[in-house]
Length: 300
Image (tube, rainbow, N blue to C red):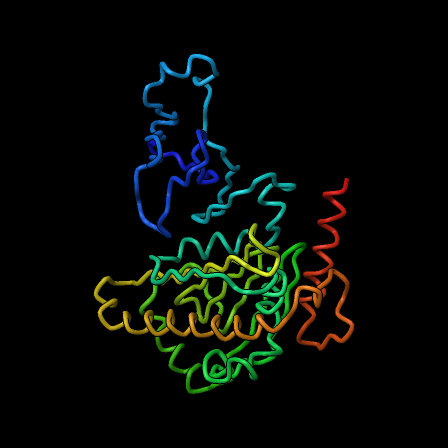
């Protein structure tokens, strides 16, 4: 759209056919059904003269609202907050992270067979890591760390307890040109659907858990892995395998999560605080509190 960013519901305003059918890529916004297209901020309608009995000149896509945080873009259907209000103090961290990202290394998308809040809560708590991810995320031997709560959102900062791996990760710092780094594992949760995590800021995983219109027992899961900027382009020759390994590890972690989330029924979840909550599950009760408050805001 001539340099402008537009977000819409991927339905042709004519008869509702999908315009884009691939997971990613750059294609012309054109509907295959009757060749309606979107160019230069306008809908192009073939045989437009045949629509004399309707207000065809004002036809448009069903667009969403957009806002930027650095180079991250957010969209909202009917947002209750300005983006800066929703992100709070997390805004500055996200902005710095966005300037550190180089390119996407992996895209993974499939349905989690569980309610979306169950998948989200699983991503929030580290209690299960040593049991479910013993050969993946668990090998970092993450310490208890610190939880930071900022209005709707939360961040978990956890030092890497595996000293050998920590030393190796520290030695890689001079390869990267990054604006933000936490020297450990960081899991930043953006209420209600998004998780951004990283180890030492060299790669980032951006993960979404969206409710499905098809079924409450299905979550539209999407995971993207990004590499961070390098000081010199030639460093990519020997870091490509590192990025590939990270991406494959992320895939394995979420496959493991999916297998356990499938065992949790929809009626096991509610917005009430956990009856039995460990110290490692405090973010779940924060999440549920934010859900309750959001429902009250909608009711008003």
